[in-house]
Image (cartoon, rainbow over all chains, first blue to last red; front, side, top):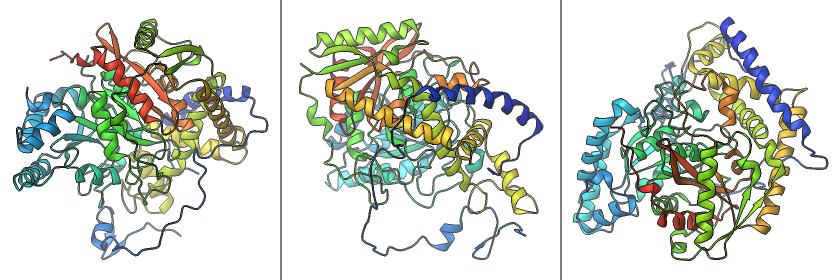
Length: 81
Length: 485
């Protein structure tokens, strides 16, 4: 799901470490949060709007400057199917 | 005094008065960097040529009789997760080792506009995930008070640079204590602004709902000066707030008489070093002597702050870091099919701690575990906010240690992630509730620094700065310089 390859060594080490961490996280089970709403965000913002003013876009050359693989003015993607 | 020894305030005054040229300042700082950088490793990238070019422009501007900005000639270091146009910005990760942003972060624009000089990008824990600056792809930064020890993290490079006077001041970022922790471990001042006060545009995201950019400085006045420049509404960050500019500097002369301090027992709990506890109580008594009142208090939900913080931060991180596929930017692996290219690239590009957090965050957000972990953590966050709201009815500020322990040895905790997480116990709740907090020097034990944390309610930077400044003016801890060399 996270698209993260793991070596056998990683798998072994992470299993122990992550289990220990998750065990600790279970501490929140004790908290009484009945009737409480979740706080996704500290600021209760809704639809922050601004005027839609056009500004010059990033030039293509700069927009592509960090792409490891490209061809002409395109980013080259690996095979999908 | 040599230019590198000056504060922000002194540099600005001297530069404006023509007693110091920006060029002299840059050369002085670089002499210092060249002498100590091999030992300390505070920087990932140095930008001497660009700095000299900026300095030349500032000096020319002064000669023409134009008024110089609020940070005139100040040599600043910037954490390597804040974008600077055409300067490598790596997040101390192999994933972004060659990334050159085509734009400036808003804070970068602001400090440039005020005639500051950026002298380099500072080392950090990879993607700001850590409390020791040991997870950097470019090797650990050393604590200038004892080079065998960690400088704290994740803004360890910024704090080290300021403490060792390799920069006059610096910018860091704080998601769960990443400015305050290294400020404490390196005996400098660090402030985490209220969520929404400073623009996050151009800050490479780790956990959006928690993080803020903030100053790392030699004293409280400098901290307020730098904050003044970066606290500005930004239409490019929809969570940036339109607030009246918090004029922190004007509160400096007001008294703390009658100011109410609360000392939450949960932040001085089990695991707090006796010497740290004593230094913090000494500071509380000192502030009482200076006119404030104090009362011990309890915020029970703080017991759940650490697991709730880590669950939320990891969940947000797993989502944020999904963008690193090596196509538009970042490390790209060789392979035939897309899934292979992505999975291999992310394995090689990310270090162990980043991978651990992506896995845990993905797990906490996945169907079947979402309610149990992520949603529950968000509800605990509400509980913590409500508890803090109740505290603000009784107190103006809350006082605690910044870190429960003294700076530890490099390598001591790195193989035990949970032990490292536990160090953040006193700082994370401020990010969860969205308020502000400052860390400043309050003593030493065995030659190692101790930091005092002063917590304030959202948008009340003025109070914490006032308390911090009063404490600093009546103590001498901040005047001590590391003598390791």
